[in-house]
Image 1 (tube, rainbow, N blue to C red):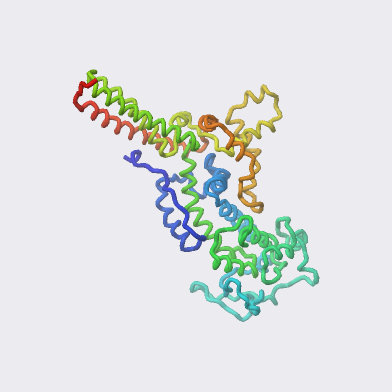
Image 2: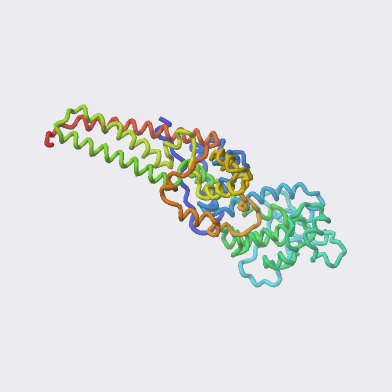
Length: 450
């Protein structure tokens, strides 16, 4: 019975408006409903840590977010934050002391004109905060930060900062240039570790109108920017990290697994689904003709194979699977993968005979290795893909070639097992429905009209 009623992860629609703690909490509550539909091997951790094979690898997840759901900035920021936290806590204690944890702060209202608010406010020496019933925490004073005596400290570039702190920094523009981009209320504390990198994150993900702007509410955005004015500690970004992770776990990941189960592209799935409907219609017409004719009742058994084939491929196509491709555990190439395949052939150094000996799987493997995974870079342009060459090429592709495109082997075993379960489910339902409809056709009396 479990096979008959197995279902793919239900589609989780995006909550309208910006992502907030309350809206993402609804995503978290829904994650428990997908545990039975998503095996442990395809969990969120395995996918984002690249422990799953294609079509469920981290690059496949990123491709889905870029080309299908159009919110890749969430995963890009989350991957950066995980790496940033590791690097920050791996730094020396003296460097970490320059960026104290962010526990509590008075958040200014958006577009506030309060001129008394300065960067030193949060570091007042005598101010204490009570956090979640825990011990009293004394925040550091600016007087405790040992600044170098150089008067040009605020103009140090990234390379000089890296040499003084001993911490690996991204080679980016100077902190002053970053401050101009992010429009902070005060100059950054350039003695803090990773300050230039944090400024670049602000200009890419947090500032309104940035290239990879996160869909945050104005209240949360102001709170995070306020915290980052004073410290580069990962705790200053906890609010954004929690919101992004809740959205990834509760909405993006289940939808990605649901999408990855489909082994055919949209044109092929529609073609197979219409073929199933055509078989069912043909079975109904044949049954009616045999009932109206003088033919023997036993000729009506010929409607059974038509019913079975129609419902078999129709039920599977309804869940995005092509039964014919599934017999060899393969899947159709995505449009952007088809373009990568062509590029890989132009970059192949072998002769024509060697190219002819390459299988589709070999060519796709070469394309995957040579693919320029810009989407996995922390800093870059927007995630728009309208400028990519494959878009126009795929539009000009004939419908026949879109339906019968090349396919590659499904490498992830857990995904193959899920697809096997869905195909067996389609077999079972097709058998049950076909037997019932055939019995109905046999039971109807002979009309003897034609």
